[in-house]
Length: 242
Image 1: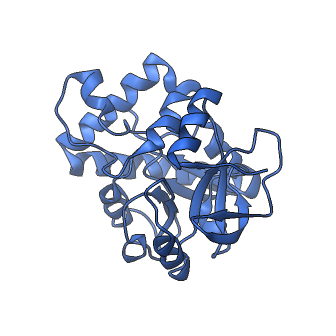
Image 2 (image 1 turned 30 degrees about the vertical axis):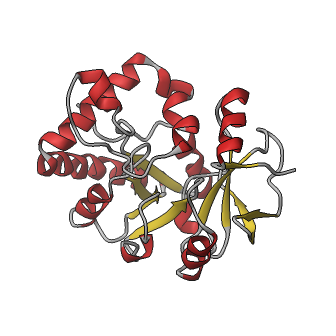
């Protein structure tokens, strides 16, 4: 079973800026339990209305083969974490060699669809210092886990309060915001989220968030259907922009 992927549209975009990125694609929330009839804990403990726009419901992530593959990976994680991380570290050695051949630096996003900081913290101990590790997270107080080895961007949602946004930005943690901007349309230069206004970064241009300047909102275009976008806007998870 392969644990890492380097062949995903968003990850591939990072090669434009000279970074070969690998990711670990696990089942979000409790999807693994419905696929394999297991009883594992949730992989997204702070998921709320983000389930409406989860990337598991878009593109190739909806293919039965992909759903089963990430369920098997997730089962492997919960069943034997040490073996899982050792295997992922061995696969990263191949990614590093490929990066060297291509003249690219290398990065790892341990949680493509999940939100399990334990994976990233375990990989830090197993990987070279020059491999950048990064994630999006909804876990509170991400600055206590962020370091030179592990970059975090907070995923804002309908429960995020104004004081939390300000505190995140004050700690150098950018906040990702899902916006209604259609595909192909430019992201506004700045947006307001929970009463806080900041300049934006177009988060769809590539995935390497550790290259972003701080004190910005990372704007991500809605990827799902129009009907689910309407629900996401009503819930407050997504933000309507011009």
